[in-house]
Image (cartoon, rainbow, N blue to C red; front, side, top):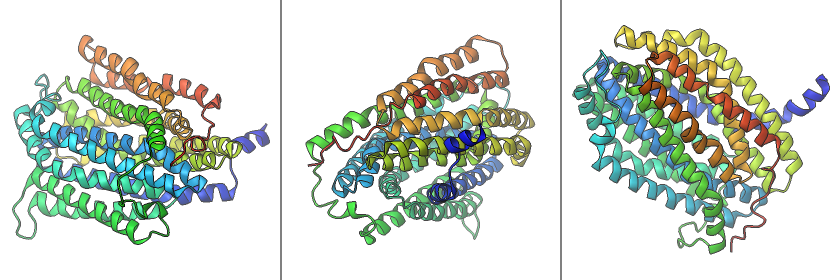
Amino acid sequence: MWDKFKQKFIGDKNFYKYVLYLAVPMIVQNTITSFVSFLDNIMVGQIGTEQMSGVAIVNQLMFVFNVCIFGGVSGAGIFGTQYYGKGDYEGQKYAFRFKLYSCLLIAAAAIVLFGLFDTQLISLYLNDTGSVGDITLALKYGKEYIIIMILGLIPFAVSQAYGSSVKETGQTFIPMLAGVAAVFTNLVLDYVLIFGIFGLPAMGVQGAAIATVIARFVECLIIVVWTHCHKEKNPYIINAYKGFFIPRNTLKEILKKGAPLMVNEMLWAAGMTVIVQCYAVRGLEVVAAQNISSTISNLFNTVYLQLGGCISIVVGQLLGAGKTKEARDADNKMIFFCVFSCVCIAAVMVAVGGFFPSIYNTDERIKELARHFITIAALAMPLGSFSHCAYFTLRSGGKTIVTFLFDSVYTWVLVIPFAYALSHFTVLPIVPIFFLVQFTEIVKVIIGFFMVKSDAWLQNIVNDAPCA
């Protein structure tokens, strides 16, 4: 029994060496990013509850933009990864062009939306039913923050288009380096600009926004310059700007497979913000507590998110090379490794997560709510880990319609109505509401298990997608 289990779910030394070679730089980058975000959150939280809440609301809107950008690169990324596995760098170049166009278009749309409707968007999360904080001040600080953050949307979009293409080749170190440089830039400038160090005026939330925008430009500059200076490692970038053409067949296939994925990411991100808005009707203290909880959760979630993301690289390259048996075997082992790692991390989060809210300079009721949210999020983390792996497994084989149903349709049809009904039509306290909504993930895990087990995702999508 053990031998059979070991053969199916546990890899050898070389397997884990390769997985960790890909994953560790991504984990390091995102852990540092999450940690700096945590410190940034604390620094803003030292100013006051309204400032922290205003920034948290805008960051929730920025989260939608970030995930839309992820969707913009993901559709073409399926093809880019398999083209690289096949050795077709011309095809990968066209996938890169598609990403760049998509990301710039999404950024332009976001600039218009955030610039014209900032008040309306921020106000969606403000409700005066609570007993803590001033929603008028929270709106004021949120508007100050978002108008500056808009300036960083374009460099972020460009860096993601480049970074995702670099990762498709198995080079995860440089995106990590660019990300680390950006987050340390952000951290130092946060401290200097928020509190007014070295004789500079204390700029509060505006200083936090300026620091983030500068960091976005730093990240973009590093990864773009490195990519163009190392064409031998990134052959797809050669002549990438010599014309803007994408062959009709390639464009058609990317749109056919990628459009559902892009729409999925956008709808899923929007769905997450709607769920947060459902919590927000219970008062500003819930917004603040949920902000603290999500910041801590993001710090602990990094390992399983990046290990899950590695599935799309490892399995996608094997499928592109026509090695379906190896792809299935690698997927089994990576899912087990990811979920097992997540269980260990969740246990640590339960043990130490409750101490983090004490660091914040805010009302004690907010801290107590945050502690409950953190514990619930930790208990639900292994479920999220498996469904995350299932999502990337399906995506690696181009099953984008299935991932659309599995991810965003599931969220909008089940989770959002459930959260809305509990928050608007019941007298349940916010903590049990948060628990019930988080554990709807059980349904998704069951669905994901049978989808992955079906092997319907084991397909090579680039052999039938000519690039010229």
